[in-house]
Image 1: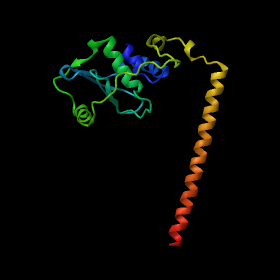
Image 2: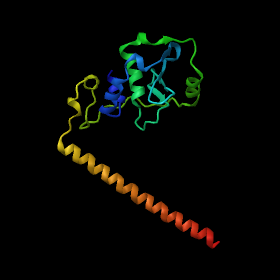
Image 3: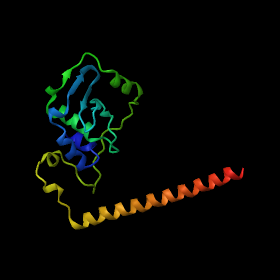
Image 4: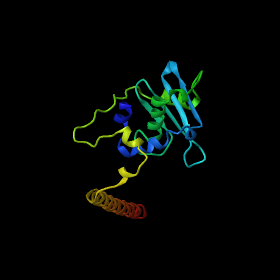
Length: 178
């Protein structure tokens, strides 16, 4: 469990993963012992489930979801299930083609799980597993910082789009001139 906490990008990812640990979210959970692989399909909001694979030996992972957080909540949930309910995984004679594709493309140079940075916010599986909403309450300063960051990102995006449009105008003018 400490490995999962160390790999999680933030507490919100752990909390989201805790909601995905129900067996009903995973129509397929399998493992292949000789290769130390676990994989599954997690039903998301779309018609096709997300495919998730984890190498339990070196904690390498892959998920087909569009999340920008790495590892994503699906990967964390799969690892969480493996740690708390290993009997949920059916033994497989061989791995599916999509797992083999990932194995063929990946580089086995994954660094060990990150050690907590001193002064960084701690991540806790126990806190993620809590079902009450007390963790969702934010203080006023945190809300203001988040809103200020959103305003700055919006302004940066506006400036980048404006600069790109200026470059496009210049390119079109150059093409017409030539």
